[in-house]
Image 1 (cartoon, rainbow, N blue to C red):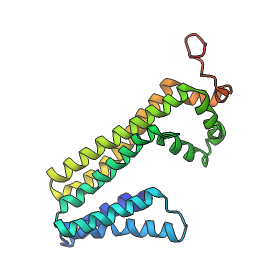
Image 2: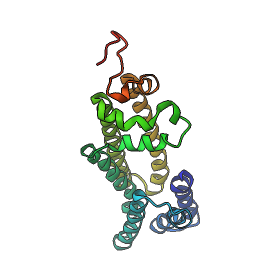
Image 3: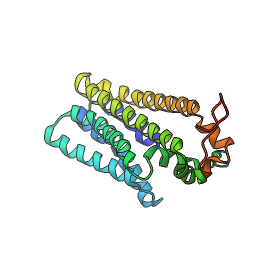
Image 4: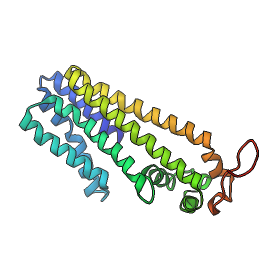
Length: 220
């Protein structure tokens, strides 16, 4: 997914530009592998989730509008709008039964080698029984929402202020920086509040207890 959705479009853009293709057409053609990839997943693997549909809509809409506006910068800024909508989506789930960071983490862990250690099958019970557990995942959701919105703003600014041919490469670098930074900050936060330790070591957490503090050993 990373290869098709990130690396191939960037490489494709620069190959097409080297061949003398105009920026708007190069950006459109460079996005074709992503569309093909989503189509393959939908047809061959029968796996097209809401995010995949959203990406296809954004790609199709931005391409259509680019023909109207003739603006390469509009196409360059589409990743910013896309990222911004995802960031808003994270924040919107704070008012749902489970915030998005919780659901995404649990979904990934259920199919990983860490499932036996971090026990995602107990998370619903932990959610119902612990205010601290709920607060931890809400904070993580805010972290991702705000971080992605900041990334979105940076992308739009880059698209409209920097030379056209430099934006795709810088955008790819920004993806890596944003993702790694958010992962590191989230991990440090989880470590500080004792989330991983509580999931590994506190059998009473799922029944409504709270992890013991290091200082006094009493529940919070």
